Length: 180
Image (cartoon, rainbow, N blue to C red):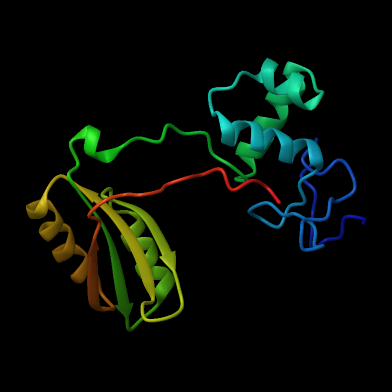
């Protein structure tokens, strides 16, 4: 399968091979419609298993040099295909309240989403279909802090209503869904 303008390869190694088909037969794509080659997908999967894995260990596992892995990882990060971050437990850091807030809007969804994304306490913003126009995840210190955040969210122009879903217990959170 050749690269087409609709499925651009990122120069320098993310799509250096012909596009690999995913399980559903379509090319595997990165965040901007980029086609990821087999080696880039293997590198991502190695980092999903252990984000602290060394470039040398990854290189050994995928058949590349440490320098080649370092370059590919940097290209993946620069292209926005992935991030490498420390995932923390908010409870262990003093944040006792986590919630998902469903939001209904009467105006420009993208403008409202951008406004909410600028709030430090909101760590997840998604425009969605269904009962809500937006879903946001909030991590806050306590119920008083949550109330203050809800007041700010409800004060955003175009927000017509909210519904708050308080997390009682987190049963699963994973980031290792693979690359398909």
